[in-house]
Image (cartoon, rainbow, N blue to C red; front, top):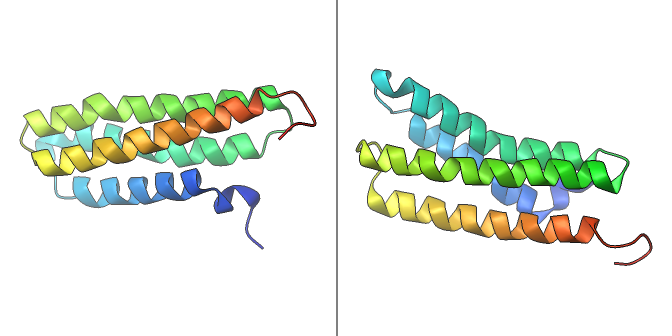
Length: 122
């Protein structure tokens, strides 16, 4: 039986993004390991914090981890831009990644808003 967070579309999108980023950064030249490492960590952090937030008991804890996940989305943005500027990622790839990140950020904002509702409301 899957964990509840595994059914969330935002979690699935975040996990797919992390997998995609890992594949893209595998071919980065040796001197750019720091960009690959940081981008991989930031993209993976999104799905990890969604999962951890769903494992928390209180709404405040869940909201905090969803906020951290959203912060990781925003961390990816300058990293992708630096990769573009260094010629490591093509413009089209950067645009597609930015769109994915924007979608995930909006979904996380919705998740955060839902944790702010009073108990008993949906």
